[in-house]
Length: 78
Image 1 (cartoon, helix red, strand yellow):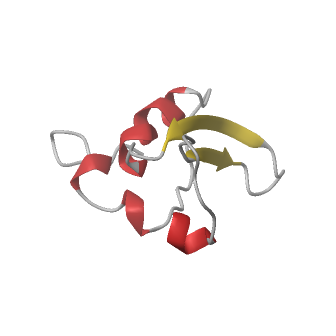
Image 2 (cartoon, rainbow, N blue to C red):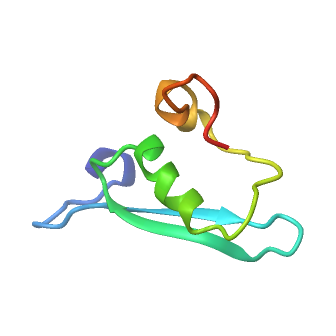
């Protein structure tokens, strides 16, 4: 991250803010703040638990693709 953002870290760790949005209303429906070494797919179950109902559509970047975003039966978590 130091090279990417051209800054020198001094005992600081990067944080990632994971957000779930209602794309119609623009409302933030779930969020999680993690340290930089926590992978995106591992935050997905906690984010989905914050949503009070079914998820009609799930759009994410490629970091959420693959086995961690599926339950043991092979079905998607969303």
